Length: 246
Image 1 (tube, helix red, strand yellow):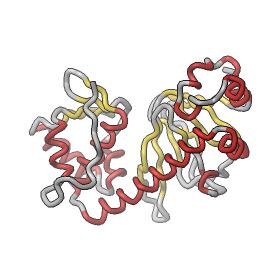
Image 2 (cartoon, one colour):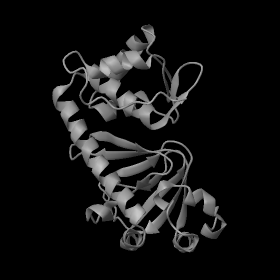
Image 3 (spheres, rainbow, N blue to C red):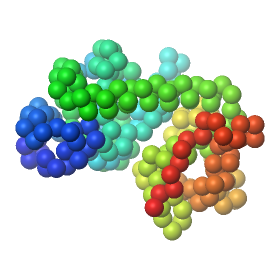
């Protein structure tokens, strides 16, 4: 699909571009490339030259980093409307992680050399990008603190709450995390093992907290999960602000 065939209203309604006049929006679309990703495809891989940045239009992606020891860490998930691959914003020449589609996805991408123009010509884009970078730094600090101070059950509960907050949908069973996610993914998000995550989710299922299957997790008792995330010694601080999906 050529960029000119994309619906202007689809792009204009994204937060990053909401304030752009139609002429600026059309100019941005003229320089965009469409990136279609099947499940498992990479938008880019760790260590590659960071020559493009992206905005996700449809689907979900996961950002995965491989440590020097070969351990794989799921850093975060990308939802529609999110900007990603913004190494240029952090003055990095190479991508620090890989970004993989967890389901069929569609994104727009631009040459990294366009980043400075976007920042200069669109104050809303600049503010949103700054907020994105700041939030990711804060998330990284939170993850480090959790790994250093919290028990595994608390970390896994917090990870599920973050996913509910990001992409939860109310169903008859409970709150469904709307994109495919495996127990191995959760283990890599929380610095633990597949065995431990499987044991926890099985125990939580017996208690009526969650239902999980192949690449599928439903939170059945949000309040109980919040209590687990709060932990016995710190009942308020650091728990994600979870809105109960309508």
